[in-house]
Length: 131
Image (cartoon, rainbow, N blue to C red; front, side, top):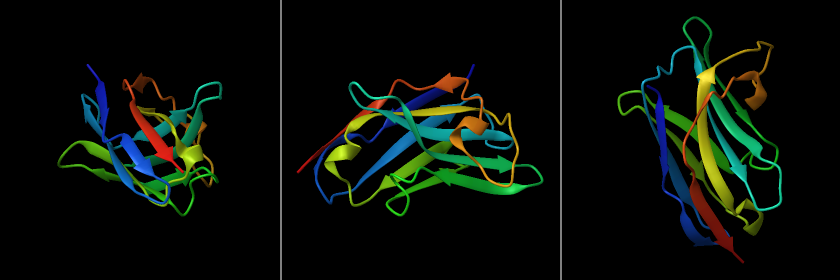
C-alpha cells in the first residue's frame, strides 16, 4: 500500500523560507515520479515541482515558472522522503501543498508534472505567507 504524508507547512512572512517534507512508503523512487502540487482557494491545482529517477536515465526535475529559482525539490532515498525547499516566499505562494507519486507515463527531452500518473496523493500541508 502506497502512502504519502506531507509536513512542514506553516505561516511565514514574505521573503521567508519553509521546507516541506513528503514521507513515502510502499513506492520506490526508481522509475516513479514524486511531485509537489498546490491549490489556493478558488484556483486550479498547479504542479510546481517534480522529480523523476529512471533506472537508466538518471534524475530529471521540473519546476513551474512561478517557483523556478526559489523552490528546490530533492529526494532522500535513505529516509524515503522528498523535500521541497521554498525560499523567498511570496503571498501568492499561500496554498495547500500536496505531494503525489506514480509511474511516468510520457517521455520527452524534458519532464513536466503531467508526464506522471500521480496516482497516489497525500493529505496536504497548509502554507500561508503574509506580506
